[in-house]
Length: 195
Image (cartoon, rainbow, N blue to C red):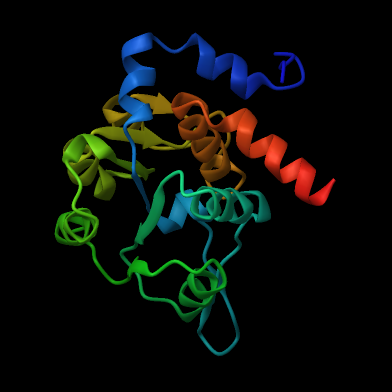
């Protein structure tokens, strides 16, 4: 399937990456995500009863489902907060590797990596703020969202065009599928099934 860079600028950006970066990304078997600022837009929406609501993007949810459904790679989520709204979204997405309430994300990162018996170079981590940098330094493939803090961007080998909570996770999923050589196959299978 051919891609017009004007219609699909992500593929143009993916193909422009150096061969060595694409090879690193192709090794990913586990993508670990932060929540606030990555899976969400970073906003905290307080309800009158004091509970917090979060906004998630459906494109990110479908991307996560595609990664899992086609056995391309696994998804884990680590967050510094423990909000029921996030737990509900994780259940909806069938994410079993969910680690809420960890400000120091290194232990959860190691637990997820060990659970899947993976080397560091087989793990990607996507973050947006300083709290994510220690984990990004361990991951073989550190990723950042477009609106991440400058220091987080400096630690990343790829920065999404999309902002956190606005399709950045879907872009990362597409990036990994592209580097693995699965993107067009997954798209064709999806279109055949639902087209």
